[in-house]
Length: 114
Length: 114
Image (cartoon, rainbow over the protein chains, first blue to last red):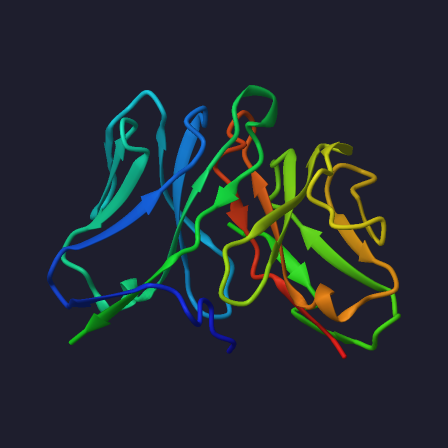
């Protein structure tokens, strides 16, 4: 299938280690921030979201941290597995009337080595 | 359950031809979104429907792009007189009621204009 993100920043992590993927966002008025995973030839897959009034949210093996002071979002993946290899995008919503529109960041490729 | 489906998965069009891309959202999802993804980049918003109403079409790049969702379910994105710069993956997403930020994507249609 076709490649997603030919020239994206790449993070290489050994299987079993924790991964941290970072994202800087631009709109301080966004209501929600979301992380998506995209494998080659597939559409983005919803991972986890965080509302703007929170600073941390945990899911299954994933944690999202939001630092509004510096407009920074991170995704932590615990015990990274080969199946986690993909391109990861952060996305932000608008505010009130534009809440439904998602604006995506540039993406980070995660490579899991054995 | 079934996810968002899109057809065709691949479309090759000669410059100047019209194309129609179809999206079947998840059952019960009232909101539907179209995005365009160029190679190596994140998806970019095109347009948004709530049921049959097109509430935001600010991302459509030109008047050659037209989207419809006449019965509030299946949606079609039509591109008239295709140009080479229209080559991209076209993604459709739908979201549950009251959760427009939680968007679930289909596999996309890769359009190549020759």
